[in-house]
Amino acid sequence: MSNNNGVHTDPAALTELSDVASHEHAEVGPDGAVAGYRADRTLRLGVELKRQLKRRRTQLLLGFVALLPFILVIAFEIGSANPNRRSGGFVDLATASAPNFVVLALFVAGGFLLPMIVALFFGDTIASESSWSSLKYLLAMPVPRHRLLRQKAIVSGLLSIAALVLLPLVSLAVGVIWYGAGDAISPTGDSVTFSQSLLAMVFATLYIIIQLAWVAGLALFLSVSTDAPLGAVGGAVIVAIVSQILDQITALEGLRDYLPTHFGYAWIDLISTDIDWTQMVNGILSAVIYGTVFFLLAARRFATKDVTS
Image (cartoon, rainbow, N blue to C red):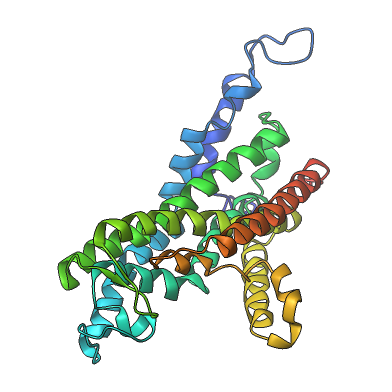
């Protein structure tokens, strides 16, 4: 939507600004603040979460995540998958059981889709407010900068987690209907019972959520550094892609361990009768370090950012 001056605004964002008018004639205290003003009641999580859920991009993204397992089923129905196959790669084993189907869904989405989802929610959060020229009005309510950034990051995190959890849940339901609740079979031939594979999927999802923290931190940092949402989202996605490409260059040897995506698929070790936790521990440590650095940089950048123009 645009106003008479041609400035684009987010209609949902205007609801947050209505509180300003209600305090126009309110009593002002000796400290210059409106009587009754409490910083901890500005930009409440429920209000921001409701705003984001009403956005078309959120609805379409969550809808696509829920639709992806059905697209995979159609692809296998059209193709020549063999459900009786007991060895091969994850694609070959996808139709062996519901747990294997979940593994495939997470595997094919882990390279691009899942990082893109996290980058979209975190990269768009502040940059979109800047592009709509509503960021300065939110701060003028006034919402303290640190609170605004924190609330936005929390909501982005909740939406990202919802999408990352939705994919394996829908995949499991679809897999049970089409392929049955059988044992999970690894490419090495290990067989894991259905109940154990469910627990493995829970840990795998938790690992993926933590591992993608570096994408969230980077996207948030880019979001507070630019007024272009696509630039922030695209920048984080490009870094993830470049990191994955570099990780394929074996000549880098030990240097690949320092790439943020190097341990992205360490959760696959969970589909085994003898789980090696080393790679996953390293992946969590790497993601926490990178994520913490990027989040701190985002907080520092936003604290001094000029939002008056």
